[in-house]
Length: 442
Image (cartoon, one colour):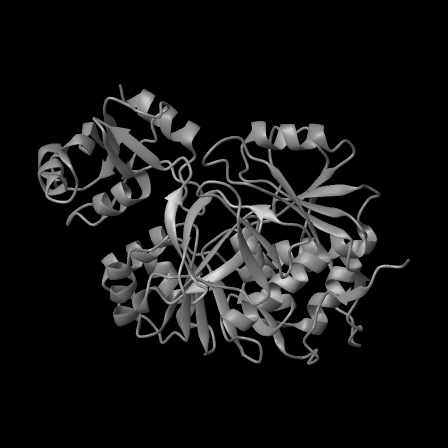
């Protein structure tokens, strides 16, 4: 039986902007023509590592690989060890890059739109099999070793439809600007799939500093949406800048504190939506955090109890039920609240606390720019430690303020003051990297 065919691009207006790059619009017709030309130049292989950082280049590579029936391998980072292991696990694969990477053992092809001349007529939107695996996304590894998750086009396509509906963007146009990499599941869903499957266009760049982000937003046409993370949004709020009007903000990778969400809505003058999901599931729920902490499941998804305090989600875009790593509590209206990760509970001197809540309390201390408690190796540690970025503060001052917020049993001893935490591009802290960072301080 032949698989159903689904479009790679859905928007009917071929002349509409698809990507904005340095203030210039690239139409859907031009993009598709270039993607087809790139696909014709790709070597025979089963998969390729898509390492393009420019979102224009990434999208060209993503679509070209899908057209050739090859899988986009999307690594959690660009570390040589990670890429070497990925190339070893996929013999014959190659890499698509913005610029050549030194010291890599696989064939590299540079994606350059300048070498892909546009054609005058608008090509028809391509269809590909729904069951075709188009991407392999890897978990961040923040709680262990990174694991692959194979995504069919049907799963990604249907998930994008659910995201558009949940955010009210089904019939919307306008522009997206994302501070997260396209290789991450959140970045893939919001800054790659939404432009492909809606009337939204996306900014090619990924600005980091608040001033660069402000400038990039200011030259994009309205309505504008910002796709970001709690770490980036806190940085923007501290900058106390005047921001161009936004239609909305989307945040993911870690739950936002409700007070911070309220401050962000007031400062930016727009609604802020959070997305809950994982590499395994994709986005499965949203909430308007300033109005409540409960999460609303995407349409068609169902939560099922899976033993003591564990849950599975099924339906919707998921081909099979997926076990969640977080502890949840369902509410009478069918929503749910997050209670923390299964490994998140810490017990010291007979007292229990959530690591996520301890981190929230630490970040709420005035003067603390960034910080994290260090996840202990044992279930019942004798003490905790933390790393904190707090310019102008002493460790004693941070501890004194923190003591007003948490039980004394969980006060970090020692508390390390540092200039910067080793966060990955989505703002997460890999446990092994964090522990290695702590060891280097001693």
